[in-house]
Length: 195
Image (cartoon, rainbow, N blue to C red; front, side):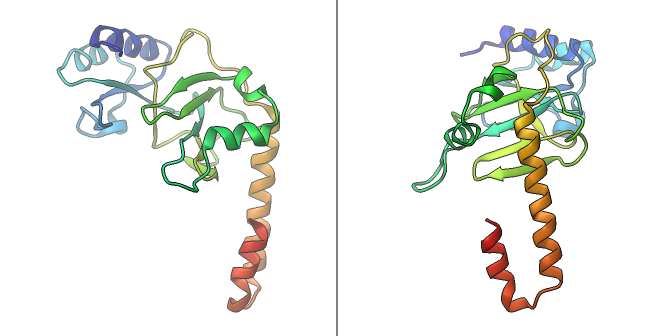
């Protein structure tokens, strides 16, 4: 378990590398009034925040400098396990090799990458499959207290993932266009075909 001195050092390192941070409790409750909106890289503020009692996690605002693939564990019987689904889809460990990997509080994983120009600015959160999300720039936070090699920026997102995301976006656009020109009774069938 990470102690408060270690958390403070992690937060200081992240802020020094340009990643806005803020403190959270063990139950993911922000310890600053406006949550991720208060995230900062100011060294004095970070030092003050992470000395307070109750700090259990370091949260990091993506802020356009990092992209995160969030792989969650299955929560209910019959749900898809995010890590297994993602690994099966990739068919290799390519994405893991080009990411900084961190364990999440719920037992899943975050894969951290440098934002890819083909994906940058397109969304805050995009669901790829059940329990597999891409967290982009904007209003979100990534749990960062397990990150290692903080002085090195993540490498570019694997090109394979970029192709997959773009193909999914094109399919969603195609289905949306077809739905707008289809009778309401046919909509469910079209949506099922797209899945």
